[in-house]
Image 1 (tube, chains in turn green, purple):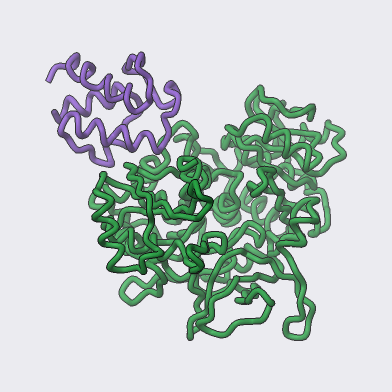
Image 2: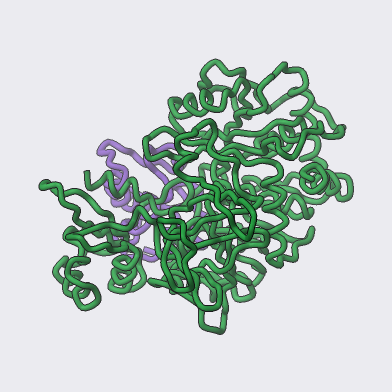
Amino acid sequence: MFIEKIINALTRQISHRPDHMAFCIAGEHITYAGFGNQIATIRQALRTIDNKNHNVGLVTNDDIQTYASIFALWMEGHAYVPLHHTQPAERSHEIIGQAEISLVLNSLPGGSFQGARLLITKDLPAASVLHEPVVVPDSALAYILFTSGSTGIPKGVPITRSNLVVFMDAFMAAGFEVSEKDRCLQCFDLTFDVSVQSFLLPLMHGACTYTIPHDQIKYSYVYGLMEDHQLSFIVMAPSMIRYLRPYFDEIDVPSVRYCILTAEASPLDLVDEWAACIPNAEILDFYGPTEATIYCTYYRYKRNGVNKQLNGMLSIGVPMEGVTGLILDDQRNILGKGEKGELCIAGGQLTLGYWKNEEKNAEAFFSMEYEGTPTRFYKTGDLCFYDAEGDILYSGRMDFQVKIQGYRIELGEIEHHAREFMQGNNAVAIPFQNTSGNTEIALFLEGEEESPARVVQFLKTKLPAYMVPTKFIFKPLLPLNTNGKIDRKALKAFLD
Amino acid sequence: MERATVIEQLTPVFRKIFNAPELEITDEMTANDVEGWDSLSHMLLIADVETAFSIKFKLKELNKMRNVGDMIEIILSKA
């Protein structure tokens, strides 16, 4: 399935439109033939290496060799494990150790890889014949992504070839029409799974992928690509769009046909304003944990209608084809419409479990009888409910539920009202322990310094007193992590 | 405004944002040359430069800004 649907989809493009552009990287175009040659070249080198382990490290330099390495590894029957180009050597070593990596592909010389053999993929002896891919079962892995674990030790999420095929089928079933004429944005780090959707979709359809060089300022470069190259398919995180907000009146890109918002909750007011910048785009909000392969639910934004929202955040909509999404209470009872509980996901997109981590697997996955069949579920840790029409409303992370003076409160609600006070600028509430060991809430506000008393006064008209934060920090901008999401850890560290 | 005046006024803005009291700016300088110059500090830098020179950059101008020299030229065209 994987070879036919993913690999052959690409090799067909390489043989049918060799002169068509496959990538635009740092302003340089690479044709499908050129990309095919790069893949053949890396495969030729891989075949000379006696590598027993199928998990192969890949340094994310985001050049053409990096992208070609992904397909070369897949076609040789291996899986890639991205190693972030800026991460500390210690973290790379941890990942290499856990995934038992004995070979690392890097397009640039250098780096420290814990005794793993290094293959430099630039300036290899050229090859141009793309041989048939090595046949491995669809149960073999496509990639392992390491996410930060709460204990500080990264957790590996292995995604099989079958997971990825099931995902791509379900994604296309959401109703995209993509052709070789499309120009698609890939602005995510390769250590983050949204990147996989961002480059696979164009490559499977003969379209061109536009990437962001590491030395560029992401948000203004994205806008430059959109405008200079008339991009038609863009995938972005809301926080990136928020960086562009001061310039919305300058942005008008009618070429955008689809805009996917993902990686974090989408504030409806921001989406409303952004929609005017891309007047012809269909906007879809996609939700999903890495554990269920990229996305698993979506909501179609209505341009001239009422959009569903909770605390100012757009609904995450309905499960994708083949995905089961249940809202369960802590006794694993299925909750009815309107009842808030944990969103639990089942289906062919689900990972087999964290890489060699039985303890975490016991916490995060469980099996129960559903519609007469024993079914394996992943607990997303997201607090949600179904509305009367079957759309899912996202209420926040379970971990963001905080108990203060015995009351259970949700940080999203505080943030919603704080954003209103800040006239649409971002606000993030972070719980912290005060010196007496009690939980208090700090509120980070993006924008110019205001008197905390005014914020308190405003919030007291909206929230019960126990929900009003006690500490206020104004920042000109809130930091984002490498996935483009608000960096809550950095904010928490600021409090400590 | 003279180019030298722009550099004189721009230098303290850079030093403050990147927390580098000795930093000397050059035309060829890019984000790669300065520790801590990322998307976030870039936004802060732009905001402070706008305040210091009482100007407003357009997104198109920000996008074409490849190095500090480009920034100085844009400031000269506005201030």
